[in-house]
Length: 332
Image (cartoon, rainbow, N blue to C red):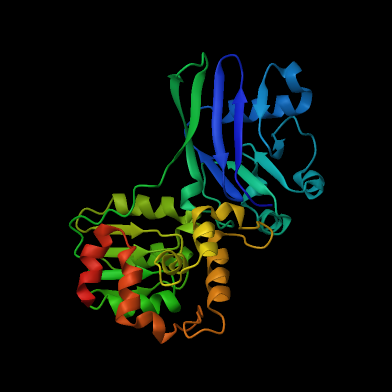
């Protein structure tokens, strides 16, 4: 399953309007923000159609798993579903299990998970964590208008960060690149996104930048931000690009119409059954595009081509200005 899927869910009083772009979407937020209302509207329309009093407009096949109405275990239902968007209501504990994570990875379906707790078994993007906001009456419609707002889109924030340390989750190609570029910041490899927080804690009172793959950091971001909030004697900043490979692909080091099309709409190319996250997709894409060329990419050992001055300038030109001004200038 791939592509983006727009949903317009409507009753006499409420309109929910949103688009799903990846295989895992997480909806968070406090009570009474519309999460349960949305899922019950979807469920009732699926059960009785227009007789429910609701309307659902979408090109996707979908299914809604509620806590009480379903009456069957998820293992009995989900394996039957193919190329389907599966909505799962809050307080279903199985979503935290390794068994469910394996099913998500292998099924090829899209999942919309309502949960306030992080799903540490699943590699989901920081860009697919939403809260539902309501703006009251909207333009020419009579209903209250509800939409999904991305919760973690305002990073990095590096003001007044002296960058004594830089932590990367990567221990291979990305670490090698940043080791070459960031000569005045002590570089540390966390060896995986789940270990980033423990390494932030180890840098004690020093200002620190953490560079992580945003495409699979969704389960870790809350704990990291909670830790950062209580730091009063130092600055900690998070930079969360999709992945190091994505930075290379968007830099212009490689150029083709095919690549331009993919970067403009990755959801049309990322098959959920083949790639559990966009990070995996971009890695495979970069490897395939550079195979048997002088700039062949390997995640394990960085090709010296990517450490040439001209290549470094192209890659770092695509960095956020706040990062570029504080980091890239050090290698000039």
